[in-house]
Length: 162
Image 1 (cartoon, helix red, strand yellow):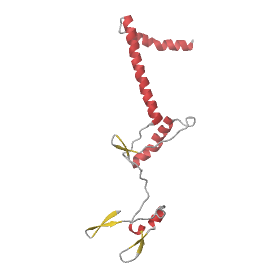
Image 2 (cartoon, rainbow, N blue to C red):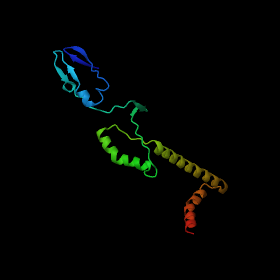
Image 3 (tube, helix red, strand yellow):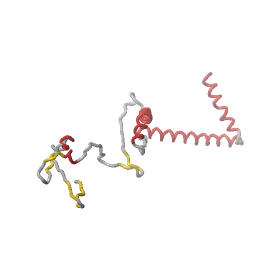
């Protein structure tokens, strides 16, 4: 239903077609409408109709409109991170140039991997602090554990070479 303003009055315009008659866009454009004086016109004479995509549901995250794009990848063929980087470098710039507010946020395996990496870095930092504390207590020095940490890479290198 559409409201049209004509000579200061709002007029309701309704067009109802059967399911079969509105199956194809061409069928809708060629729908015949009879004018008040009895002449018949196609709908395309009165209206500019374009086919567009409209999502069935609207999803929001933190107040922003979200379109979720998913893919199932075979890990033997492609890695999720590689595909994401390709989309980010090849596809995203063109999409952003046409739609300036668009942002790409990874999810699924990429998000899980990032969460694990953050956890591992945090665990590494915490373990280094604990090792430093455990070395500082028996050595009764705050400087000696740094010397030990500085010598460790050379020790590992010597073990690998030997």
